[in-house]
Amino acid sequence: MPESPEPAARHFIRQIIAEDRASGRYDGRVVTRFPPEPNGYLHIGHAKAVCLDFGMAAEFGGRCHLRMDDTNPEQESMEYVEAIRDDIRWLGFDWGEHFYYSADYFERMADVAEDLIRRGRAYVCELSTEAFKAYRGVPTRPGRESPWRNRAAAESLELFRRMRAGAFEDGALCLRAKIDMASPNLHLRDPVLYRVLRVPHYRTGDRWCIYPTYDFAHPLEDAFEGVTHSLCTLEFEVHRPLYDWVIAQLDLAQPPRQIEFARLNLTYTVMSKRKLLALVRDGLVGGWDDPRLPTLRGLRRRGVPPEAIRDFCERIGVTKYESLTDLALLEHAVRAALNRSAPRRMAVLDPLKVVLTNWPEDEEASFEAVNNPEDPSAGTRPVAFGRELWIERADFMEDPPKRFHRLSPGAEVRLRYAGLITCTGVDRDPATGEVRAVLAQFDPASRGGNAPDGRRVKGTLHWVAARHAVPVEVRLYDRLFSVPEPDADEAVDFRTHLNPDSLRTVTALAEPTLAETAAGAAVQFERLGYFCADLRDHAPAKPVFNRTVTLRDSWSRRQG
RNA sequence: UGCCGGAUGGUGUAAUGGUAGCACAGCAGAUUCUGGAUCUGUUUGUCUAGGUUCGAAUCCUAGUCCGGCAACCA
Image 1: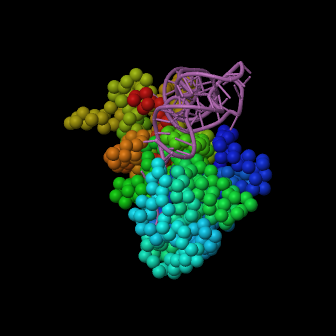
Image 2: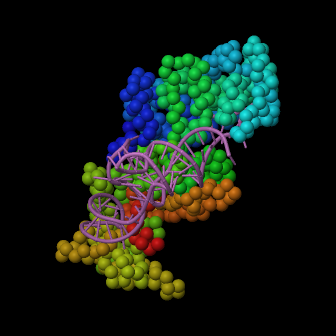
Image 3: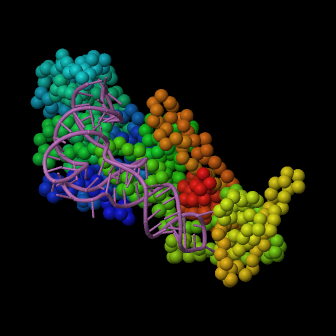
């Protein structure tokens, strides 16, 4: 289960559950549920809910159900069901045998509906959609009662059965709860319980042409499954009285309770299904698993480990007020997780040649490189060395600014694991004046990394031996949007804030061991960042790496 | 201007009448074969105005601002 270095925050839901258990409510049982509609892919906002639902159940020795809330067949499909299950498993949670479909309850729900009709608590209404709205009224004024509100129960029952049998067109009539048309809460003004929808369902096929609404179905599902704590997002707060009304009709000894919390908002991204879909549909990103997307599939492909997402979800807490979480907090969780686990490798993204003028032409050497300084058990590996090397172009400056600790004429730096070199000059293209190679001298006494005389150098560079370097496709991902709140202004299309540099692809030169990385596996390119072998496109013969996140870089920050 | 909910540093949060704390970000330093990691220090906060109280982020009153609600979506 989620491991967190800090003790868990005492957020209000944790407290409510603890109090319920202390007072003996539900006999101490804790049953939660995660109820996605299978009409889209899960994103990190859902992950917050998943972590909460499964996390609370685990913490209090209860269980969490996974339930496909498939009461509106229009966009739902088995493909989404599978994707959702896969994503939740990947996140690290297990629902055991408690996997359910709302659609499996349709018969029981219809029974409850008939019962409500018989008891005069529900009626079939024939108002058109427009009339329905007119009768409902507005928040500041009470609504009017439907002319069908007081029809005989037998008549409603007859009509409801004919609705179910397919006798009516979509929207021709509906089943409504009889509550209170004067309620200040619109959701209590005789809400719709069942609507006619002559649409086949991905699971029940043509068996039904009426479907229960969320407000009717959800409390029933919770009741059927013995859910105790039904956690959902803030926008359902105004639905709670209706949730409680439906539950009350069941006359349960231990009615479930709905508790609302604020959804997650993250800077530099969008979270709404509609906007995510637009990006995918219009080809602005490569698909639902594009590494720039906040979808779980995207994050997975980006190389974000599931434990980082769980850690992040614990860190952000749970409250009842809307907030906007800094992407830096997610990045911190990602770095923390990867720092512990990712093997280190050397790769040069923007190569500049270095020639060691005092190193014999054909002499080769091999140095021992540490695989993970945070994990001695990861061992070491040999890296090849020679007269010609590649270093990062940004690691050399002919005319360096103050505090530049890297290579420049006359300066001495360390080549990681190899030894100290001093820049003696440059080889320039006579035509353009461009630096073709940096010339340097290797200090043979420093073989392996340190000088025996104890002298120190400020800079250590990563490098690869020219003769052994393998080309690697590297996809440098950055934030998808260039502003913190791309959808803050309703009047401006969020797409106009897309970051034009959210993906830059380069061919890097890397140590050969990199090609052997398994698809999906994470590595750190020393001094650059965390990368992962692409889940789709990586192959030993054609390595492809995605940048998950850069390393913190106090030098470039200082440079502004 | 109806109803529901909310407001604590730049950001996310804790403190449940008794010293406003933690994390991220930032800054400074130590250390370092990654300008990484680690360690130390540090800047910045209770929406406003009244009230209750020995004592208020917390309780009360009034106000301000923010979010949600008028799909036969979830």
